[in-house]
Image (tube, rainbow, N blue to C red; front, side, top):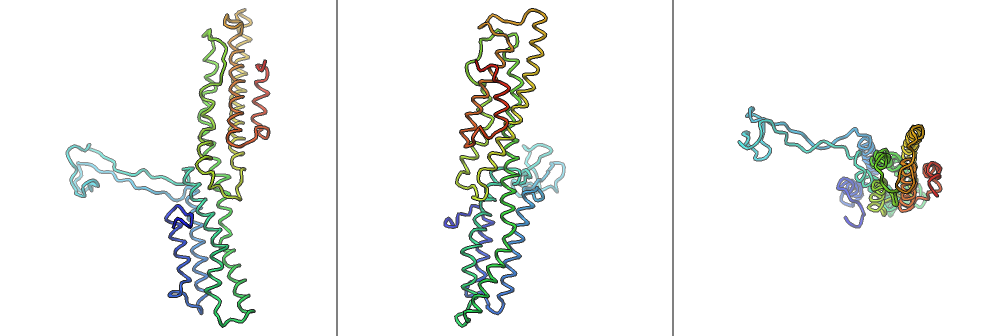
Length: 325
């Protein structure tokens, strides 16, 4: 089935079943309406199934708890009812339960298979059904009516697929990537501790955590570059960058406010400036934040998003512009 482009066995099986309806050794022309109804039901149930999975209503995996105090507990390793002596008293032999809607790669793969399915059903499949449904003895008027009916029925049946694809990318994938990308932002507050009363020289490069912020997005985008549905475009990517940049700017804003309060306190104690480079600790922190902003902006460009359209980038520049010189 490599020619279909489908990756998951579920969709390969569904495609095979839908095509089998119209094989010459199965299809009965007088029951065309019943075969069409079967097609509609299968597509509808598949769409509901993937929607439920995306929303976390369906989980996979099993959990079995065994104990060597209970001989009735099955030993999944050897098929007997007695646990080996080298196994702990209480053992959990399991494949952890999971929902594919919580795994960004799985969501993208399901959405891509649904994209292929929708495309095939609304083009090749319609022609296949029309070919089987229209007999050689059909008048042209009747053949045209059957063709229109088949097209309308199948197009209506796949109406729920595109909304699923858009939801998968513009909501589920966006949320999952935002959660991954925002993890490193916890390191922003540590920038101040790096320079506070340490007599370190002024920074010359971005903090190590900055390249890791958008790494999940960059790696995901590289892996699924050729499996992004045309109807989705780049909106999902811009949404991820916008939210991450916004949260980054908020973290930087909070840190700068803290640094400024500290600077005021040090001024009152006449201990504002340190020896290294003639810069205060606060100025070093602001310079580090400026270098971090520059690197982050470059990383945004690397994932194919123009920093100019990202509000968070503009705010970061405003917050760090004092250190530019």
